[in-house]
Length: 224
Picture 1 (cartoon, one colour):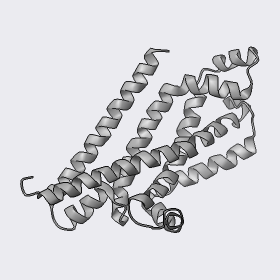
Picture 2 (cartoon, one colour; picture 1 turned 45 degrees about the vertical axis):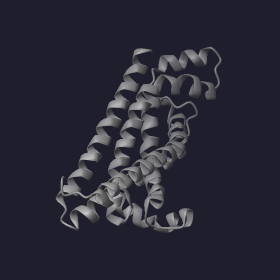
Picture 3 (tube, helix red, strand yellow; picture 1 turned 90 degrees about the horizontal axis):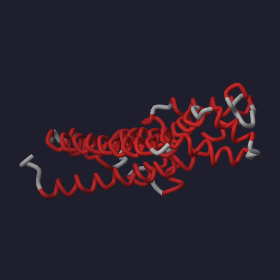
Picture 4 (tube, one colour; picture 1 turned 180 degrees about the vertical axis):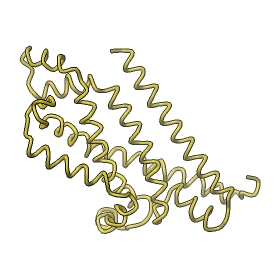
């Protein structure tokens, strides 16, 4: 570590901030895209699965689309979305451009987590709300989401951790962040120390996010 110059430490700090920026913004956008989709998948599921407004055909089509998007290797997805990234942010490389494929890659994952969490809510609670005259929107926002909140927090934690891993892979195609640092300044220049520092920072970020997520989820569970 003593061979790492102040200039390299500056690059490490900048790369860490870039990773945090990519992960935080892509988490926000993936939730904005995935949360409504997950709710829609839940309420349109067949009545046998607890759907409030069953639409089996539409649900099956959307479910297939979500599965296809989830199955795409992230590196390939980044390359396929170069034109879209260039259209939205004006460039296909760098930190800002990587936020686009990160958000699109994570949105189907978030949607499926939301759908699963909502379906885990006790049907008796839903039936009780229905008996009291609650509308579908009231059931969704006042029953399903609050009841599923601990599970949703756990799912969000998993999403952030996956995005940290995706952001590191984006470094292979000039995505910026710690992954880019590890490849360009660590692997390609045979700087094992720089590569090790980048890996350690990524591990620390993952552990920190997991710890915070577990604490919040456990606290919510204890209040129920």
